[in-house]
Length: 78
Image 1: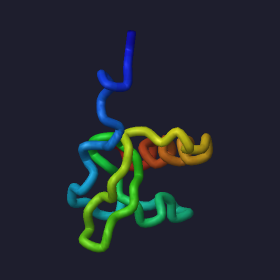
Image 2 (image 1 turned 180 degrees about the horizontal axis):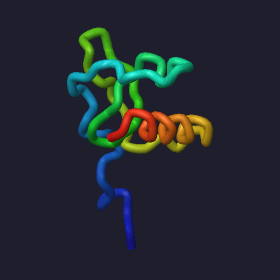
Image 3 (image 1 turned 45 degrees about the vertical axis):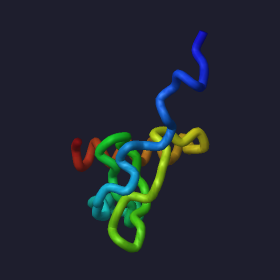
Image 4 (image 1 turned 90 degrees about the horizontal axis):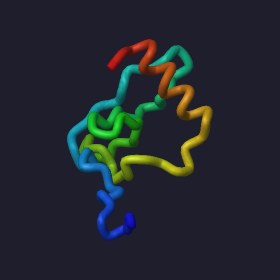
């Protein structure tokens, strides 16, 4: 049986890494957030320009955010 004890940690290993705001779409998405190179989510930067602590997945992510992220990748590539 799968248990939480055997699961990978939820915190993304990209947390705390240096980052910079990602290129924007015409409407400003992703709003100053940086693209995490590990989990490929857009996350805010702290005052030192590092990716804030974040999980590899966001259970609260909306369909709209997922669509916008896909649009961003279609526009700017990987």
